[in-house]
Every structure is written in C-alpha cells, then in structure tokens.
Length: 385
Image (cartoon, rainbow, N blue to C red; front, top):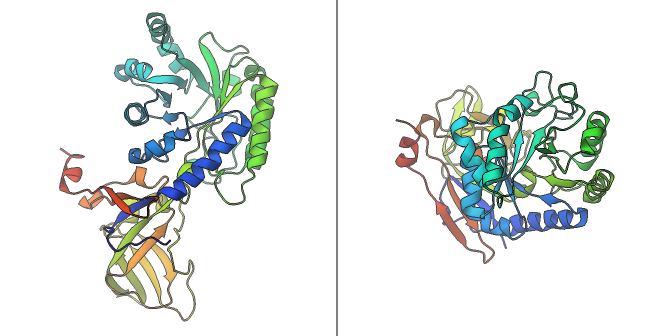
C-alpha cells in the first residue's frame, strides 16, 4: 500500500520499515551462508531509533568517533568495532572500555598507544579487546578521488613497504577499506591485490575486516559470488571475516519529503525553490556529485514538458540541482519526493544559514507514520556558541 504523505511534515526523512527489514534479511542470509560477521557502519546510517530493528539481524556496529561508539553502546547494547585515522589521548581509555575491536591507522599510532592497550588488558581480563592495523592494498576502482582511500598520498592505512614481515605482538587483525558502493567482482579483484601484497600477514592474523562499500542490497549484485569469496578467504587463511557496509543497510529504504515554496523564471530557466537544501541536507549530491531521483519526474530534461531546476533554500549560489521535467507545471505547495535519501544523507546534514534540519520519521509495518523528531531553533543554537 502506498505511503499516505498527508500528515508527514516537510521536509522530512521517512524511513520505510519494511524496506529496511528486507535489506537486513538479505544481509543476514549472506552472513550466515558465508560464515562471516556483517555489522552496521554508523557513518552511513546512524538513525538510532531504528537500531532495535537492526539488532534483530546484525550483531555489531562500527564507529569512527567516540560519539559513534557511545551511540552503539547506548542504543545497540554492543561494544563497538572502532577505527579512527588518529586517536585522541584523552578519549582513548574510554574507547577501550567501550570497544571490542580497535583498528589503528598507522604503526606510529599503535606504538603510541600499545602500552595503554597492554595495561588495559592486564587490568581488565574479562574485557575482550582485539587490535588490528589498517592496510592500504593500493588498489581501488572508486572513480571519485574524494571517496577513494587508495589515491597516492592517502592518509588511510599502511602500505606493504611500511610493514614488517611479522605482525607485532598485540596486533591480531588486518583491516582494509577500498570499496565504495561496488559489486562482488570488484571485491574479487581487490582481494587479489590484497593477497599479492599481504598474504604472509593474513596467515598470521586472526581476523580480516573487509571494510565497507559492499553494496549487496543493490539490484543485480551477485551475493553468491560474495559468499564464495568470503568462504574461500576464511578457509585459506583460517581467519574470521568481518564486513561493515554503510550504504547496503539503508539502500533504497526511504525518502526525503519536501515542498515547493516558490517557482520563478531566472533568465529563461524555470526554478523551483524547495523547503530543503542540497548543500545542508543532501551534501553528497554536490560532493560526489550525483543527481538524486525525484519520484514521478523525468531524470533528464524532456523537450516539450515543463522543466525545472531544483533550488535549495539557502543563500549559497550553488545550492541547486537540475534539470528535471514533469508531466504538468509545478505549483507552490507541490510535494517533491527525493528517493533513496536515508544512507549517507541524514548523517551529513547541517544547519548552514540557520535552515532547520529535516524532521525524521518511520513509516511502520502497520502502515502508520511515526514522527521520531523535529528540529528547530535549539538544534541550530546548540551547534554554536
């Protein structure tokens, strides 16, 4: 049954529970068949009101800051898998207390904190804490440099020439992350590059974290290939395998509901100004960049049809995306629904220009809408001083 948007505020992120469960069921089937652990990456989906649903299918989550670690602890009840490019001295003890896995980005970071790790383990024998090192396989098929962790000069991970022939005492695992919304065939080629450089160390490790970017919930993704790859790696190296997808969890599970505030002619170009912002609420559309799908609209301009550039409501000149065509002219008050706006969108919103953040809600299994939260002046004020 289609969603009834009548009583949904605008703008609003709307997560569809059934779609989220469908993704999680597929992911759970993969992890069971492959014999691996698949965990939630908060950098892609941090909607903690949905964590009770996620917990039904996944047994962990990964964090890249102390705040994300706390969110995992508080709303999932798990110790975190934690990776940060660099750790802060005054946070590290709490991170150890709240984590079950900690990955270091460099050997200098490991050398700096290893004595604290050893002391913590000695004084907390019942707390299971395993440490790993992030490696750079120097292979990635990500075309946008901003999202490619293997570009020359990347600060993310250690290249093989900087590693000894033996994993240091206290380092149990190897972590890599060089995919971004890729398929299992890209993973296969990445693993070939990883093994070429790091096979000897994989034989010494207890676990391998393959990071994120495994878009297994996208239509056409070959999950059987993924299962086969994981099974072979596990068997070859006698190793535990962990995946931490960001996009796959909430891929196509909801939308951003917006409203047309004004329609204007700008030097022969029709512009629709919305009650949302691409810069503040959908920054990936400008960073990647990519053109989001609008429900019921033609994704490219169609000759003879009403065509509009979609404008955000901030004063940033570049706060727009275009052009889309519609079957009939847009009017003030019309609803514009941007598809697939739950992953890597909600987590990046800002209050630039004092624009309110979109509300957040869930369209539940019982076909009712539950408003989780609305934002106003206090949310804007609390980010400033």
